Image (cartoon, rainbow, N blue to C red):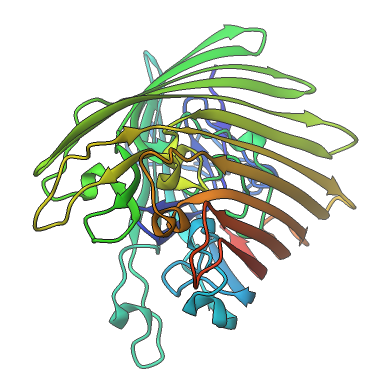
Amino acid sequence: MKKVGKFNAAVALGSLTAAVALIAGAPAASAQTAPGSDTSSVAGQAAPGGGSFPGSFLVPGTNTSLKIGGIAKWDAIYDMSAGLSPQASQVVIPFAIPLDGTAGHQVHGSLLNDVRQSNINFDARTPTSYGELDVFALMDFFGQQTTQNVNLNGVDSWTQRVVYFYGTLGPLMAGQTPSLWFDGDALAESVDPTPAIGINNGLSNRHTTIRYTFAAGGGFSIAGAIEQPNPEGFAGTAQSGAPGTWQSLGLSGGWVRVPDFIARARLDQAWGHVAATFLIRDQKVLATGVRFSKTTYGGELTGHLNTFGKDTLRWAGMVGTGLGSYLSDMSSAAGVQVNTLGTTAAPLTPTAVAAPLAYGIYAGYTHWWTTELRSTLMAGMSHNSLDSGVITTAAEQNALDKRHIGATGNIIWSPVPQVDLGLEYSWIQRETWSSTATVQNKGALQRLETMAVFKF
């Protein structure tokens, strides 16, 4: 059985370069849907000469139906507390929140507004003897930026980039798409796509993958995926010379050998859905002067429950070792801990390696006041353990995140199905494992964000 979904996803690349994609119509094998984002009926029924699905047209001389869609999104972000850096402020990145006592904590009241979350997408579907062949591509404007791009004589100039590009044929899907670990049906609707804590919230869900989904009937399905790996973690001394996160592909001469393996069992019923997902990562680091490996594991339970009318309760919980970016708000800080990687000029293989436990819990509730107006409340917590035999000093522990706690509330009005107008408040606290003589181990973000989304 094929399921056509719509996504609200946000992705952050490598370090803190943010990337946001709000999908307005993405077909995929076992695709995950996000609340309030399904606009498949907006385009209406196919007109004469139209294609096989709403909003599409038949490409002349072929049996391929093509739909061109997307969104124009304006959003304004005001950080009432200590704000994130300009490079990180376009989405919520908890591990970048300034700690009390740092220079960044002294800056309050930053304002940013842009259209980088806007996107355009292409959806082509062709009938074949093996079932429907789908190809989907989405591009947004979160490509790598330079100072000149960001503001040139007062004019913003954003770089485009490919976010998703994949194909499906029956139960088989391959390409760049959200990870199988990501369950969009368990993630409540938000103005900023990344404020949720304790869940894979889209901040790091975009993977190159090949996936197979078996629909067993009765709403039960099983899926397996092989995904692009990138071993990651935290070093007491990273190659920058200071404590910090690392990724294998970011090390000098770094490469990877073994993919990540993910399996999911899912049950869909009229009352909602529940899914159990399992992960194994052979985090083998192979780089210039650096060789080590650690096998890590994770498990996740997610779901949603239809309550009253259109209201929904959504929830998630995960636990594992070396989860890294699969626990989005912690990212690489929740990966493999090592005592040192040397420096770029003189890399070293660490003498102490550990993969402590990390976990996250999340819940969100959406209430519909009218057919056009709804509100969401969500909250979550994530915890990252410490191996004090690996990360030993106060300075190192001050840089390693221990706990994130967050809460978000919003109101979104859709005067017509093609338009969303929203206002949202988020509070997120970051806590690290230790204070130093000058820097405390806590910092908090208070963010007010508004949006206007126009879909086509």
